[in-house]
Length: 118
Image (cartoon, rainbow, N blue to C red; front, side, top):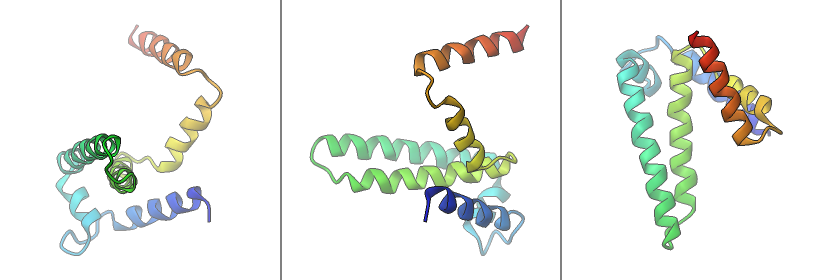
């Protein structure tokens, strides 16, 4: 089972829960509440990833980083679904960047942003 399959299945579940009953589905509840709710959760989960990583630097369990990162990815996937995007779009962007130096990629992004602003 590949990670792409897992992401695709999770994307499908999230899509199926859009417009669902907020009393019966956590995803439906987040989407029903709107961006404020899921964006807040993304911020909370990102902070928890950082805290887990800092704890791991001092002997804490590294597995906690994985658990918190899974929460962050999940809530990020809910946000993607809200905006009509998916994990596949993120994977495609990562594939596009593959082989590019991070410094080069950031410089290209700045040039594109500057051109778009003109």
